[in-house]
Length: 323
Ligand SMILES: Nc1ncnc2c1ncn2[C@@H]1O[C@H](COP(=O)(O)OP(=O)(O)OP(=O)(O)O)[C@@H](O)[C@H]1O
Image (cartoon, rainbow, N blue to C red):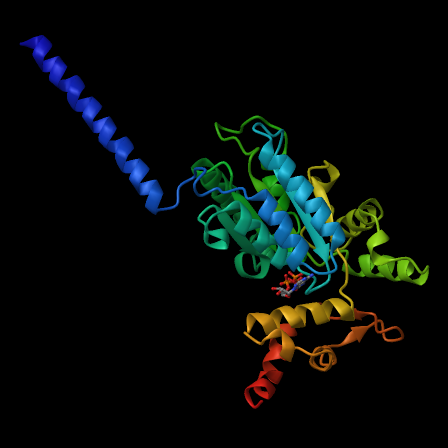
């Protein structure tokens, strides 16, 4: 009887594992899994979307696309990808993060493999920095274990308790693995307003020399940002992550000019189903006039970038309804 019993056991085990594999396959068709079906890596689409939807940020498109493409295409990257987005409010840092998420994950920002931390929401008390450090390490470890290609976005880095981000330094370094977890395929994006003033000053100096905005080089701006991020108070202040060169790329967001604001206004009107023939230069100017520009003597850049555009457009939508 013995060979028969063991034979039955083998068949049962095989059937069970077959059933389980079938169930997993079916489950991953319907629900998000950490596989190629859901981790779409649409790099061409990402480039096209950034080129067509992001206005006035030539340095961002270039550096971001290159860094992400290099990291994703490398089957065995040496370390996690760490991008530091710096610039004034409303220049598109969150917007770009969203575009990246949408082209790397089928479910975009809704993906369970995309995590957004907002400093004032998740880490509001400087006195609790030690607790936050433990929570952050546990959270990142748990999520990277679930899916190695996870995206972590940290918004408001400038408002993050100082020293906190250094807790994740080992995850950003070149270790093959830490306690059995490999962090090298993860991507971290840090969003920050630090460096915004320095970027603006540099952009004004460039403009005063009569040069085109598109001639501003990433290399010049990168040094400007590193100094500001390290010396201005905020999450990266005197950070080991900068000292140890663990940031793969510092990405400068330039202050937006009136002409870029007008492009954002046009996008917003189109998104609100206003037809192109109704979007006149007069309308664009009318909305653009609602925003504030500086420096006072030159009125070059929108103080809030494109951030308040949608609200301002809402104010004139009634004019279209009455047409
Ligand atoms: N360069 C841009 N091109 C096109 N649209 C933009 C650009 N910058 C901002 N926008 C629009 O303005 C909105 C607000 O911008 P966003 O939240 O990305 O700015 P931010 O740089 O993250 O600001 P903050 O530093 O205040 O968080 C975006 O959702 C987008 O619609």
